[in-house]
Length: 101
Image (tube, rainbow, N blue to C red; front, top):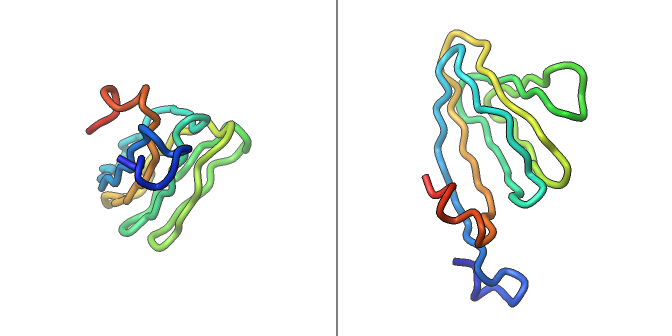
C-alpha cells in the first residue's frame, strides 16, 4: 500500500512480478491508462506490438521500457528460449482484486 507516500497515492499498491513467457507465448492485449508500469527484460527477448507503432519492437535482455498513458499493446516471444521479464506497476484501488496475481 502506497498511502504513506502522500495523499495522491492513497489506496494504490505497488506490484512487482516475474513473468516467464515461453517461446510462442504471449502477454495478451492490455492498456496502461490507469496502470503505469516499467518492464525489464532479463533473459531472452520478446517483441512488443504497440497501438502507436505499425511494426513490432524487439526487446532483448537488458532492455527496459516504460508503459503509461494511452498505450495499449501486447507482447509475443518469437524466440527459441523463454523470455524472463520483471514487471513493476502501480495498481489503483479499483484493480486490486482483479490483478493481484
